[in-house]
Image (cartoon, rainbow over all chains, first blue to last red; front, side):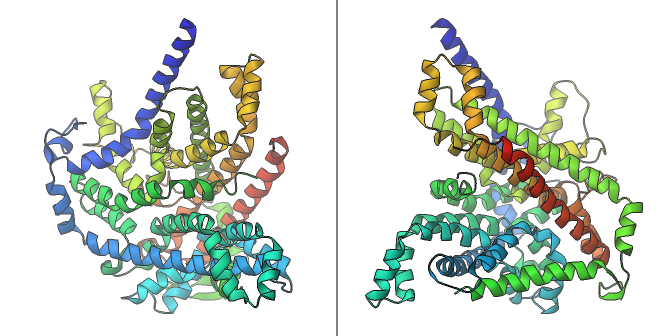
Length: 276
Length: 280
């Protein structure tokens, strides 16, 4: 018994030690956001704030148009999420229920897009989108979302979910005079909410966190997304870490909310490929 | 109903794929517009130039950001199996990095790594060790960026492996316990083999992810110092987009190399690892 609890104590100690490097950047990201220059801009820097310096929060809005960045990211990620959900639901329905010529070949083409890294095709995409003039003003939004209107991952995951429905369901619906359209929106989609939510959460997070594409595409500060805005804040205010961390903390709030609220959908979505 | 997706993939995946090949075989003027056919010129340049260093950096970055993050997460998940109190809270805590984007995490690490006022040097200072130029010393910058990347991937790995552990049937574990398997033996003979599908998935996904890493390098080091952190994707960015450079031909040739590496990595991993993986 004594030996047993000694082993348990060791587990706690080891886990505690492992937690320090994992949790410190989280702690510092948020606590640093309310630390004053007296704590941050000195050597050695303080680990615990001597006083709460809330001014960072208002200062960061003065340094960069953070509110505007928020709106831009919400428009970009929101539009990509809605569009990918719609196109994926359509495609998944077609692959699961319709008799189509060359269906297997088309499905392999969809899966092949998963193997093509975006970075390997980013140059022609950039040339096309900037050639169409979608890098200036409000058109920037269009340039940000156009290449990401469809998703093989979403199609694949929703097709798996739709295949759970018996084919008799489709036949019965067709006999009852219920067309494909009504079958999809009245029966299939409402019954597949968990899978749709899993795709939605995943797509939203990856769109919101995009870095390479917005970085090269956006020319006007007014249309900058939050991720690029934070990185520019880091370059511009290197001497004021409190200000930078305030921007980081503020930009983290939406993703933290999505991750916490959508936790079970995230696990569902990200293990879709891991579990067989 | 397939049309919307087919059109998007045709326009923004398959056409650009062909176009990348085309650009890689052509020269370009200073504005990036393609000029004459140059054949394998851009590919030959890679053989002679600094491209070997870029590939080596990419390999090191991939190795040292994937392996520690997967093994570290496996270690923590196995410890969390030791029937201790507060497992759920601890698991959530270890998964927290997942909520951070590459950009936000990189900026936090930029502040931590700040040579003059960063916490990393503050800690060393209180231990009586000299300051380290985390991001500007050519021999330290790559490990520092790798360490930040390990942190970024840690939460995801915890989530995947935890889901795998909770899918292991309790009867199997109980039977092993009755047979006297505990601690290390239980982990190495039962849990880890049963986790092999998740470990396999993580290695594949993390490798693909690491090969595509860009944000942390752009934010932390801009590929420097002295090209020490210029990975393949960062090199593509530098040639095509950085500082008004529009060398689309050479950059496209590198993009083709990236494509080939990614495809062969996936193929090799499936070929070698699939046979060692235990599926239920």
